[in-house]
Image (cartoon, rainbow over all chains, first blue to last red; front, side):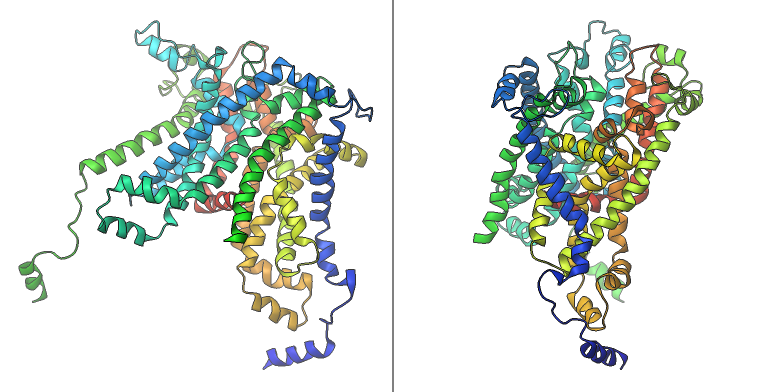
Amino acid sequence: MSVTSEAERGRITSADRPRAGWRRNISAKIAAIPMIATTLVVFVGGTIWTVVYSFTDSKLLPRLRWVGLDQYDRLWSNSRWLVSIENLLFYGVMSLIFTVVMGFILAVLMDQKIRYEDTFRTIMLYPFALSFIVTGLVWQWILNPDFGVQGIVRSWGWESFTFDPLHSPETVLYGLLIAGLWQGTGFVMCLMLAGLRGIDEDIWKAARVDGIPTWKTYVVVIIPMMRAVFVTTLVIVASGIIRLYDLVVAMTSGGPGGNASQVPAMYVYDYMFQAQNLGQGFAASTMMLLSVLIVLIPWAYLEFGGKKHG
Amino acid sequence: MADAAIAMTGPRGAKPKKALSPRNIMLYGILILVCVYYLLPLYVMVMTSLKGMPEVRLGNIFSPPVEITFEPWVKAWATACTGLNCDGLSRGFWNSVLITVPSVILSIIIASVNGYALINWKFKGSEVFFTILIFGSFIPYQIMLYPIVILLREAGIYGTLGGLVIVHTIFGMPILTLLFRNYFSSIPEELFKAARVDGAGFWGIYFRIMLPMSLPIFVVALILQVTGIWNDFLFGVVFTKPDLYPMTVQLNNIVNSVQGVKEYNVNMAATLLTGLVPLIVYFVSGKLFVRGIAAGAVKG
């Protein structure tokens, strides 16, 4: 057959003869140059560069004049940065709790062998395809005090009804949450649903035979079994929250009252590209990196360190 | 007859559930309520964008338009102002097209070759680079922004569309490489070995075996990248000039501009126009979109 003859030819010309050293796999190495350059120059190099320059007094242009931890001192005594951190913590915790709880409950509902599952899923997931800018602007309009929800309820005769989260420093984060949850919960629901579908039918049969009520099966058996799904979801959602930027720009531009809804990503952008105070921007972005590492390293340890042992 | 026998012994199998049991009413009730919440903003966008400004001021945002007008759409597309430019969102739209198309093509080519090399042509250190790449997808972009600005400035392409295309290619690489790597690892290795024995090289196997066998994953990558790049805001602001702003940036500038009377109907038409491309991609792609984000989830 032609296959064998080709194989014979291959053996004779021995295109596969092991070549020594760096010339082995030379095409693959050339093809991987963009990847290697990206990882070494941009990811590793860029990160180190920014961390190093965060210890300098760079203003308009980066320069290597060391000032030790001055930038960090200034950062942590800047009220705007402190507000940003507080906001991010509050938004992050609320957002994590709500997306995971709501996403899980929705996934459980979707997992009841319902009809039109595809339709329901399509509707719940479509906001995830939209940008944060679009999301933010739509909700800004719905929450508009004159024409949106507040205006409508007032026009029904309840004159004192107040629902204007975006224009009061105390409530602005809830306004952001409404929009953020609308955008992201469908995604978490999909992850959870995939997790639920990955659970063996036999588990359910066993629980039914033992007469355990459905809700109890979820709490006692299913949720512990989905630990990995929950952890992965938390990591993805958390690393997205730390980057939170577009949504705030679109909905409040950091206001009201100057900085009621500031977030760290905004602080970095403003100091790097607007206030021409690069050192502050570098220091702030290094803190962002640090916060991601705090989330990431324990998870990577659990996920990959655990696998090796067990 | 068989029918008679069944009739005599009664129906077999589980008792059919009633369609209108209290459980079902509650289940579907909740799901429909949730769907209403999810659809509300889309509905409001469409309704507001079809109203004239006087009607917007009078009516409530949930009521359908009494008089349908497409004027806000025309205005949002062609004459809405950002700063001194008054040629509407069309400018941003074409910028976004010019950014998205090359970025998507370039990033998919590079990532698919990466994934292929990582699976079939492992070389010393290739796994290390891959691990860094995946870690890189979690690092906040902010920390890499300024070094990239410097690199692009040195290359003389800072502030151009070309520069932004490279940025998108770089930041799309982790997730796409993972996507392709996982997919290629499911292709039987025997195929690769047979092709090697037949004398095919790196590119020969890529183009004649891997590429034709993995068209679905290319479509998934395409969906992922088109929506991702179209929706980007941060890179657009940082790496381009006002003339070249992508659609999302221009949209934000139109809607959140401080000067002038707020034309909410034009704003909503503009918002809808910007969301239209990802929405179309989403509704057309259906399950492939879910597959794409599920792959994105694996990255985590």
